Image (cartoon, rainbow, N blue to C red):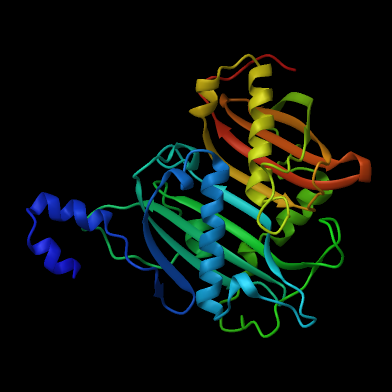
Length: 338
């Protein structure tokens, strides 16, 4: 039907229609999914909106590749199970930033699922700006992500774990896979590309950054922001604090530090986030006060290259909630220590 429509259009209009046409997601092999979509107001702007789309892509890919119904899965005891984000890495560049995507942008998204054991699944997403007559879609791999990354694309690596509630509330979450889910046909991630050691070290040390690196000098030793989990904003449909809300809380705390350093909002909006890594260690109850502790470093030979680190804790329960490290390039860099 699309072909007959395009044949009745002028060449330039046909190209535009082909670009805007959104096919049903389709498989690339047996463990990758391709989709073309036009970004709507609900899927771009604030980071939490775009990351919500990443969650949909992740769940949709796992549903398709593992033959499961993500929204109705239960464990062997009949309890609902959820594919929860545990580790997230987002790699971008000047040509593609998730907070700079806007209404009507047409993107091509390819997602590949990897077997990461009986209780976890790792997915890789490559996001590219769509163009008419471009090369046919191809699967994204860990090799591409870590060794042949396309600087014009945005890459998202997410490790998700199956969890369920062992009792009411958000604190007693335990690993629990759905009954009968099949993942043995998915490829296994090469050990050299596994994030396991990276996020284990980050949980213990409180950062993904090598603080001993001679290339960077400290700027901010400690800056704290307090936040209370908001029942009107931060919860998902099953009452857990949404992983994308956590990312938004992190960015909000970074903006406060940004202003504390004497920088303006425009420079924050125009920042280039080259690398963002988050390890989620725990969920928290509604109305819980959390404390975010921020630190930063700048590259000695180029102060525009900065590392920001955020640790979120639940002080009342003395629990680590998450660790986040961002590699940011900004044209507005403060030279004053804080």
